[in-house]
Image (cartoon, rainbow, N blue to C red):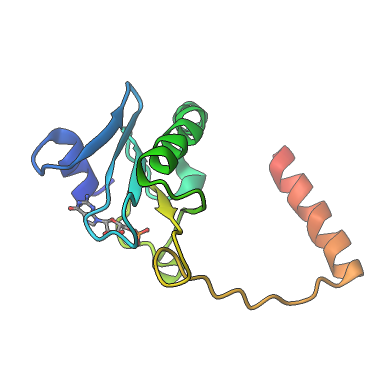
Length: 139
Ligand code: 5GP
């Protein structure tokens, strides 16, 4: 996998404001925060997108995400927040090393803004699609 700005942060070549670290996970403040406390949580072993992440790395992130969210809430005093995880350029991924954003939402202006152009799920198509997905997950 190509080197990214996050591998340089992991190797210490680029500094960061570290929030949390263990054997598998690093969390640090985002350099371009959408709101105060905007934190990035990344696996130490590089993977471009979430679907490429190992079970071990994803479990390690899942174990600490709620704890880091609690710390962000406590320190910022902001109770509401978004968890964002972008995969691919069309999905707004700019750094191709898996990362989760924790973004406090203090008010309508600050934090993440989400467009949500909801469609309507057709019953028959939904049945077929869910069956295909179950088969794909079963492998
Ligand atoms: P993406 O759009 O890929 O989901 O988000 C990448 C995030 O990485 C952006 O929010 C951006 O501000 C952050 N970022 C990019 N370069 C650096 C950096 O050098 N240091 C830190 N701390 N964050 C960075």
